[in-house]
Length: 82
Picture 1 (cartoon, one colour):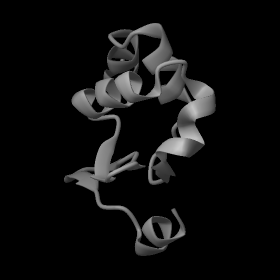
Picture 2 (cartoon, rainbow, N blue to C red):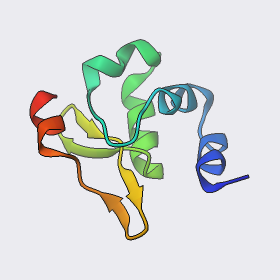
Picture 3 (cartoon, rainbow, N blue to C red):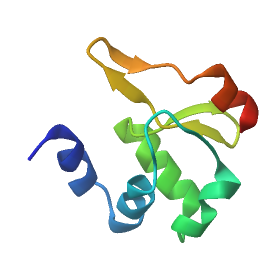
Picture 4 (cartoon, one colour):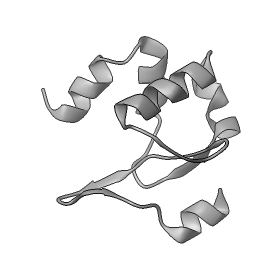
């Protein structure tokens, strides 16, 4: 089992479902993710705690892309479009 699958399996079912809808490198608004979760705030907190999401500002989250040197910051146009 690789690291990503291990992190997904340790998440509760709702957070795991929400995490499966995320694409690395994308910036998301909270309101865009509501349809994937029945308890959005709790699931977002769980994904932030596990590193699957990074909170950029209130209601704005980033699914980090990984490189050999660690997590990459979001692209400027991704942040502005969110």
